[in-house]
Length: 413
Image (cartoon, rainbow, N blue to C red; front, top):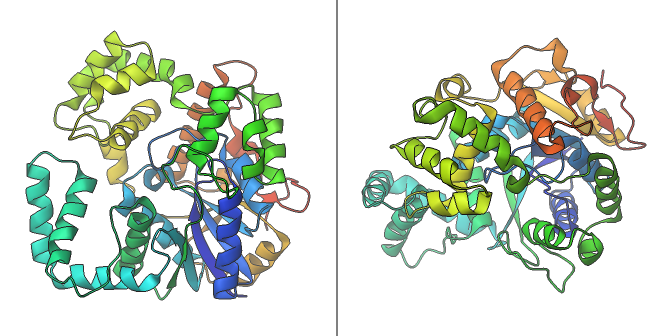
């Protein structure tokens, strides 16, 4: 069976994501689509709208055959490390190709960009270093260095690395190259609203950001129903009835603020991504601000992007330290969240040839990264449920991989 990989967050899954899965299958003639999906905390340093199990159900109902969890260490990292972790998992499970959405919609500019940077590595790295020294953010420094290299070769069509999906696509391809994988890269043009857009689109394809913003402003799914599959709508309604809350920083901020004030700058300094004295600014902001928005307004600067700060805060909330991160250089397992019958057949045929151990029951496997995944899930559940009966602690130990056909809890064996 031929497998094609995709990297997703589904926060929540919408019509554009269904289109992506369909086009990935069609473009590569795949028998199965395998998704690597972030857990309960996401790449931009945010708690997920709903948990990983609910998003797995959305995926399996919408064209995905297997869902693996991207470990916390990579799911909450910058674009290069996020891509590295996801690509290594897709390679380990035997994907022949992977497909990403992009603003360009053409693979050649990405290939040209990789070759261009490879040929000018010293100049590129020097330009990045100089840009960072000027006080601009790391993502902006990368793009500035890239434009310096690009300017010397205007005749070569290259990818626009100022666009969010193009940036991730570029790093996926760079990761494939760095690990020597034979996976073929395929891209499709992103349809409808952009990645960061907070508006809804007349094409019935909206960004997940726009869907969440609409929901939190109206507290109803009515305005977004045209932009999400029926399965997503049903699962969100079920979630609301059971959990009474959706994940966002406004809900989580009281818990974050407590931890910051309890630990103080000296302990915050040990947290992953916290550097250059920003722990003092974070502590002062927590002392003075009782809302997440005002807290972020006090901390954000030219040097520290909103996303970078949110990643720090996610690590503060979960207690993820620099020392812990140093022990998690590479993915060390394939955490199975769910599958269809086709996905089950694929795994059954390949289980002796997987590049990493396959985990369907967390109690049977011991690993620091897996322990962190479980801890992050419990912290997410506690904060979301505000410590009430709606908190769902320990789901990783009692939830087996989900089967799409009737959302049962059958284990993969």
